Image (cartoon, rainbow, N blue to C red; front, side, top):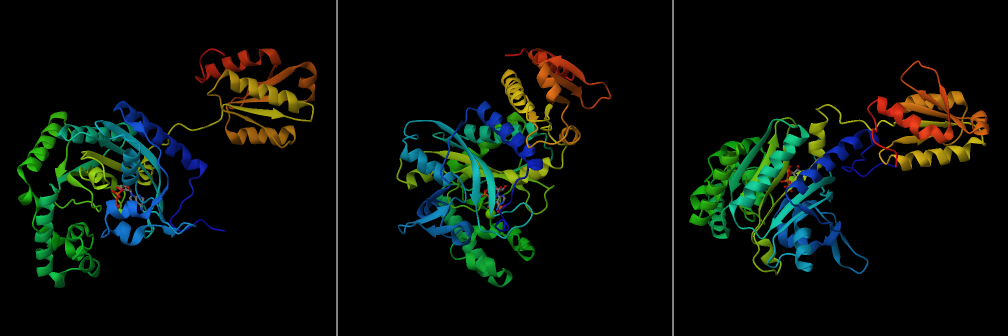
Length: 428
Ligand code: ATP
Ligand code: MG
């Protein structure tokens, strides 16, 4: 049996990095007042069709859609924003309220798998509701910048753009349609198909032959109304004031239909073609479109696989090396081993103690202890059980094995570990 194409196992050797990333993200989100929301993985297909947009790659060809047993069309979520809006409306979180929410979990898109692009991948999303001004745009961008700093990631560039309001976008769409239609012989097949339904998507094309044409395409800046222009100017002023560097990329349009005004991407050169590690923007119309009252909103999603790939280029995070390996030989030792192991874990909630299970001679258990890289071995055999003692040995050192009374074990072990800078602090 093999895993489904594009869906990856995360093995224990990699899980430490994932945990480090997830914990750091959670801490940073909390420091800005974001609260967690947990959302289902499956939703009605219509939810995505009506938010992400019929003419987008995601809805057209990337969703895992299936009929439920009662015939409803359901889809594995390809992203989190639509569910977040649905849940917020369903539970009355938006009306007259400010919300800062985050979620994490797997997303599903049937794309061509390649480095940094999978069919099951993981996102952390942050979404802020009820705030129309550029202050929250700036804050959510600061949050990203802080996260990269905390993670020790350098060389992450910020690109921003504005899509204006609905009217500006409609006129711009028309202008782009006219422009690309006039050059229809210069565009690739894919773009040709997209042109009638979603001409903005052509700006996103990675096709080398298209780049020159895209470069000369009309810019949206000329279509902005004064309020959108003011919003964008204010955002740039705030970013300047807080010292966040950015470049304005007038071709940055994002692949989802619901965005307006501010859009942004955090990009790195260090991952090859899949260089966007975080992307987002404003979607002021979506709550209303789903039947709620007008509610300004902005959010972003991090692609965790891509950030883990960057972390892999840095030094490993603190290992999950065990502190103690408990060796127990013979049937008599089993009960004492279990009792001692439990009391040690009770005493230090952060203790990592591996107890030998499944038997084995002293020799083979010591071999396992070495292999585990534990700092200290505890040894229980028939002799120790009879005398209510336990052996202690520091595994990285040549020194002798000591024997202590079982009732003194926690004190001795605590001291031994403390000398190595581990688990200092009182016994419970
Ligand atoms: P891309 O242009 O790379 O396809 P996107 O515009 O489709 O990205 P979003 O829907 O905005 O991406 O998702 C936000 C982030 O999630 C992306 O910036 C990326 O880091 C990550 N992401 C998106 N699709 C995938 C995927 N198939 N595999 C891994 N990560 C992904
Ligand atoms: Mg995509």
